[in-house]
Image (cartoon, helix red, strand yellow):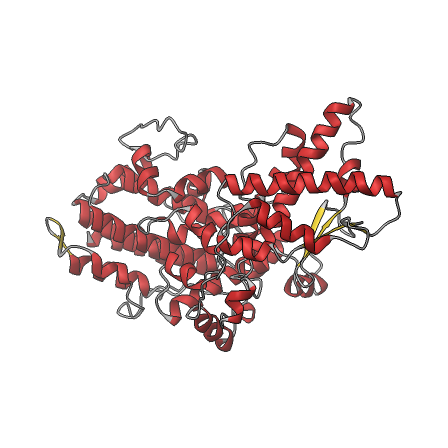
Length: 506
């Protein structure tokens, strides 16, 4: 299989780009998963072979353009220490009426009604008070019936106070963390449906929308550590402190079941988190090929403010691995949220295109995700020994097409940052050498398999249709996160063809 490496290396040299990424391949942190493989993986393929390939992959060091966005060593140390002092909540009651009674008790004014910060008649206040209470009760029951409230969530929710008023933002419901206030802008809810002439239909939409809005806002206190855990000494309030996991947090917020929404309401909520789920899909590649990972467990970690669980989920066992994880997530957040770095960039350049800032930040994070994901894939292949070579090539190309999406300079999918090109090809060199040795196939067979493997757009569908020797139903069962990624991340497989053509493979 050395001829594969030689062929790929020759391709790199032909690009006239300095290539030293494989120097010092003995460096890098060992992965705990590596030691779990059997001593003999395949006939002619040993555990030592796997370790050697993984060590070569560990030595690859992607280059980041904007290192000043990274967390400081002090911040990293603080996050690691915070993960070690998780505490348990003392609450033992999980009941919708109990939560409801506490919230209402916190919310009543001197008139015995939910506080309203604008003037309406007493009769209107009483009607609105009763209406909001009904919607709150139903929202809590819906969430409890869907197992969306834990004992700690109930503990945090019971501190809430409802206020009916006017929001300064273009939203129906707002949560103010400092004051533990859930603000409901009922007039804004009504105005959203003012054009519907059928009164019954309009009223049903308003009620349905308000209940879902309340449910959505009740997810915010779920993200926080409850008071009793903090009193016991837990230091982290949420896993999102420092805004380095924004996409993960927002995807969690919008993870509630929308099946009971009408068509009009669904259009309001479905598009709120499309970018966050897109980003989370890319990040989830880092867990996809680890054993027993699913999206529900990750959301539970988010809502339990469980840093230790988060690090365990992504198998971050060393300080270096934690630091790399936050380098990746921090870079993604800088790219996708308004921040001082974007402001400074566009202040000092004539470009107004988001792609210019994307190119400025660079693609080191994508190269790192690719490297770490393919390491996991190699470990999984060697450990379980139950995937066909067609299935493995499909998975490899599936990951590669996600990484290459939005990686071309200025959206030109034939023009890539040289360091990024070097890193992708270096990773592919190692993977192809591993693949060829593990399955004992020739260079010609491997090349033919690579060219013949297509990324079928409907592979994730429930019917589990299998084709071209790829058992998709098995892949989804084996790697459950693939279902979330494929549903929420749509990218054209042509990115691989364009990239391969740009580096002379085709």
